[in-house]
Image (tube, rainbow, N blue to C red; front, side, top):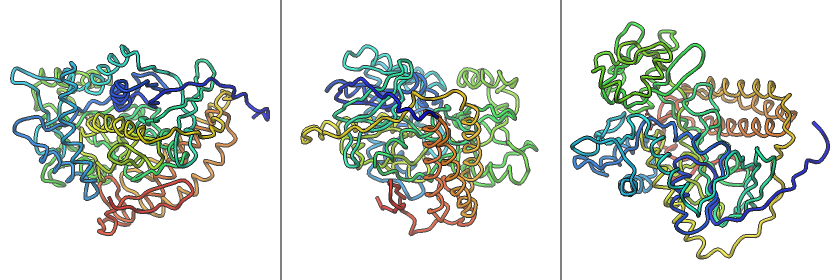
Length: 534
Ligand code: SIN
């Protein structure tokens, strides 16, 4: 590495709302905020590359006359294993219906037939209430709908291929962020009245994941370094049915296939879910993932199978056209072949601790979508509640920021220096790949579906040396490993702290739920983890 001081000359931008991230939560926040002021969306990739874009599942809302917000709330709370923030659940299920009706009024099309909207069934839901768009391309449908509105909106500017390196914060407030524009090789200091984090989750910290590569929790790291509280980091949700191949190539096979009647079978071709839970294949997600884990452990196999061969072929091809195509690319016919599947890291339940208006402990900093933790999902998120969470809390974040503007006198925080990316040296690529693979592999083995204290302790010491090692890398490579290492450490420390098994967090050395751990674990820079009750 050169000792020459890097050139951080920069341009400056001012905006009312800085939205970091361009998934469903970021786009919805931008769309709504544009009614009140200027919005700048900054995204490290392009607007189409978010996690939401790839969401197959759907969006849950109690819109069917046979259903009600009360039933939706009960299902969410049951799945959450005693840790749901009940007020947040109430907001989600009630306002979720309103937000979906708003979108329909704006022209968003959800799948319907001659009788009206079509409602799908997924694990943990007592009613058919999951809306889809384009069969199993719901995330794409919603993101594209909002992108078209954002593109036409003169109050919204989008900065693509720009990585936010740091938030501008004094540990109490936040007044914007530093970004690095990869195309122009330029630093930008963005001054914002409100900064909204909508950067998604951290499941790509794991080797097997349904998330895009970039989902390694950089937004969580930005917030943490700025002094924001992170909560429930130990709860990583594993999706039971990600496609399995020896090459490591994987993709999500939506829970909706089980909602339509698909079975899980072991290598003898026998169904096994009924021996674990009365709802069989439609048990809550934590239970299905753990049951598959147990089956795999017993049989020594790396995967179980999904079978749809007893269902109508034309229906499968129409309803799951996307997955049908992906399986065909692997030489398998979804309508008649056994499809190998195994759990994969899917959703980060924990995140930046926020109140019901998306506010964090730093004034001026807000968060919505998967990067946050309001406690709405408890210890195990109910399927298809995440796209709903995005739109409900994205609106609330902007309403919250608008209230804050009424009383805030404006901030004058010393911006400091940005993280340095311009000196990134491509010769570090191989070392970077090796360290990254090591972290992802260790996370999968130590922080996977079943964890134990001794292994987690060893891993935390190992992470300290991995983080040290990363300091020899240049620019972005060092930044990225440091960020991945630190976020893995927080997951590990919280997992060690939670000496019980609850929802998505299972400890072989503490297999029971404990009443005194019906609390949330909070991490904050420079402090030991602490517990809060919501
Ligand atoms: C799925 O389609 O199974 C995923 C949906 C979700 O994670 O909510």
